[in-house]
Amino acid sequence: MKPLIAGNWKMNGSLAANEALVKAMLDGLGGQTAATDMALCVPAPYLSQLQSLLTGSTIAWGAQDLSSHEQGAYTGEVSATMLKDFACRYAIVGHSERRQYHGETDALVADKAKVALAHGITPIVCVGETLAEREAGQTEVVVKRQLAAVIHAVAHCTSEIVVAYEPVWAIGTGKTASPEQAQQVHAVLRAQLAAATQHPERVHILYGGSMNAANAASLLAQPDIDGGLIGGASLKAADFLQIVASSR
Ligand code: PEP
Image 1 (tube, protein in one colour):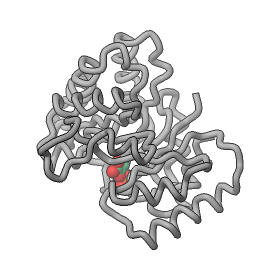
Image 2 (cartoon, helix red, strand yellow):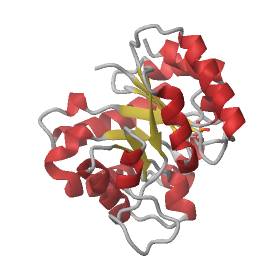
Image 3 (cartoon, helix red, strand yellow):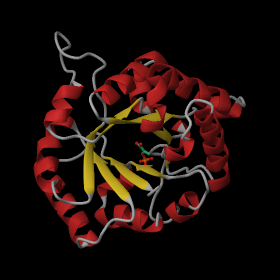
């Protein structure tokens, strides 16, 4: 399985900045055949731009969220069908910022993952504990509960999801889980997937949380870390490409 490095631009960007960033990434890749799967998850208004810039390249694109509803009176929401109109390959679901600031529950995140799969979009399912939960020794319980909700909802399609372990205390803080801390949780998630699907090895389990050009290689060297979900460092072409290079 090729590693997967996915960028999460969060609520950043502009038409001009995106064009410069994506062109710098494509120039840096220089048309080489990709040993690593790559994706950029961008704000919904820019999906059309990313589709224009990335079609025919080795970088896929995706959304940062999607609605659990198919269509209708859900002001502000974006449906899976709309994402498919822009050929989105991925959608992040259950990012901790959605759980924290928008009250997303395990059940809602699971519904979103199910809707994404039903529309041929690969959900990147984020799980992760807060600092208080880690300090209370609850890390495993929390991430297993979050993943269990998704496994229950998507059932036989479990091998088609991507999982991202993102300790909340490491996101955007500059604090990274040590490779050993991350591997320990990834192994727990892999075992949970193994109980739910015959092909747990097919599921990318990404690490996310202040991954950068300097620390990526040691994290990605862990046996159950299959790639990264990259926030801040995905806004700098050189850093993102260095992380991609570290994954080979
Ligand atoms: C993220 O937002 O998914 C993330 C991992 O952010 P950062 O890399 O900035 O910590």
